[in-house]
Image (cartoon, rainbow, N blue to C red; front, side, top):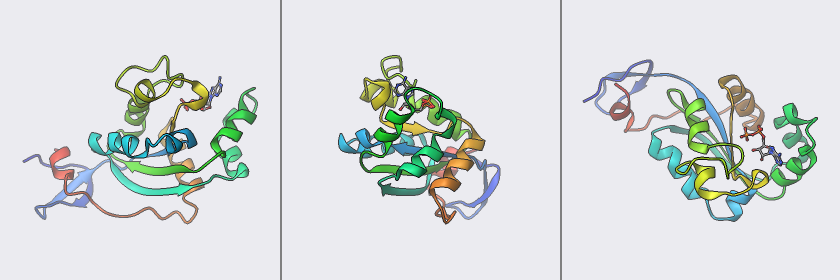
Length: 169
Ligand code: ADP
């Protein structure tokens, strides 16, 4: 049995375990929801071993979309991006685990799905940059910012998975 490390969690055998607290903010964009890919996309993060801390199906208003993507506001595609992200329900999530931000970016793949590697979400499931199915935070600081912005009451679910002691030594 692996010996867990970092942040204290309740392990299935009652011994303390230690996990790194890093969180990534993930969105299944409207095309992903409409195409029936919610289960497939969530499954990839679950199978990797990250911990789901918050989740909601939600239609994003324009002002929230603009705040979320404010770093891109001067880009020519910004108005189209805001129309796209507000065009239907999204599923937004907070995922936690060691190195989750960089790892989620790898699981998601390159922004342009035609350049994304096979095996990544975008590489396997999408073809256009403007319909690339999923968002993932690009830094731990942005993960914090985005989770605070979307989970307005700041409350994520506090729980531990029974698999943690088998993932972390
Ligand atoms: P990523 O989502 O991979 O972090 P960016 O932060 O550069 O990529 O862009 C945010 C989102 O804006 C992209 O995921 C995509 O939906 C959209 N986008 C980026 N570049 C373009 C483009 N050239 N044309 C249309 N949409 C774009």
